[in-house]
Length: 340
Image: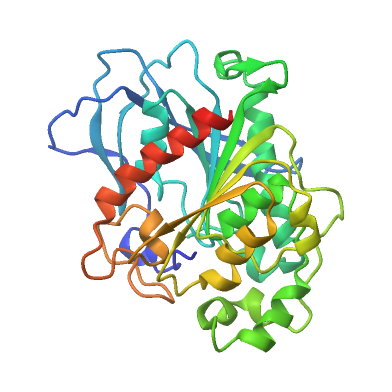
C-alpha cells in the first residue's frame, strides 16, 4: 500500500538511462507526459506504455529504483484495444507496476499510469494536510487522466470504440484498489475506518497505524458528487483497501470487478478488505495469491525501500515475484479482453 518517502534517500530524482543490457524482443513503446490535475494549474505526471510498430528497439531502462522494458518515444500503433489506467498505492509511483503495464501494452492496450498528486513518494500532502479530500480526490484524479487522453488528438483517435464509447478499464493496487472500486460505484464512508480500527485495530495493525486509519473523526468526501465514472467498463483491484466502503453501495455496483488478494497480506488484512469487498460486490471474481505479501503486485525495486511492512522487495520464502507478475500480466490482459 505504501512506498515510504524514504524512497527519496534511495534515489533523489527519477532518471532515464539506457543500461548495457541487450535489446529484448518486445513491441512496447514508452513515453511520459503530464495532464492538468486542477483548473489552478497543477499537473498529473503520466507514464504511458503502448503497442508500437514492429522492429522498435526495446531496451531495459533504469528509472531510479524501478525501470521499464520498452522503446522510449517509439511511434505508437495506429490503433489500440482500449485505454487502461493504473492507480498506485499510498506514497507510490507511476513506475511501480511497469511489468503489468508492459504486459497489457504488448496485448495491444494504451496503459496510462499516473502519479497521484499529493499522494506519492515525493508528496504526501493530500493524506496529511488535506485528509478531508483524500477519498474524493484519488478517483477524480483518474477521471481527469481519462478526460485528458480522450481529448488528446495524439491518442484519442487510436483508442477502440463501440456503441458505448471508448473502451476504458482501470487497475489499482492497495489505495489504488480503493480508487478503482470507487470509479466502479463504491461509495466511501471514511468514518467506517475509525470504527473498524477501534474494533479490529489489533488484527489490522498496519492499516490502522496509518494516519487516515486512526482519526477519531475521519473526514467525509469533499464534494458529495458521485465518484463513479461510467466510462470505466471493468476494474481490477490488487490487494485493495476495502473497509472504507458503504456495503450497500457495493451491492449496487454493476461494473465488473476482479480482485486479486495476497493471502499473507499484513498491510490490508484480507478478511477486512479484499475478501470483504468480494462478499459484497455482486459482479466480482476473487483470485487468491498463495504465499504472497502485500507488495507482490509491484515490481521489486533495485534498492531497499523501507515501509511499515518491511522492504518493498521482500517476499516470503519460496515466492517468485517475477514469475507471478508474468502470469498476472497475462491474466489481467485476458480479463480486460473479455470485459472491454
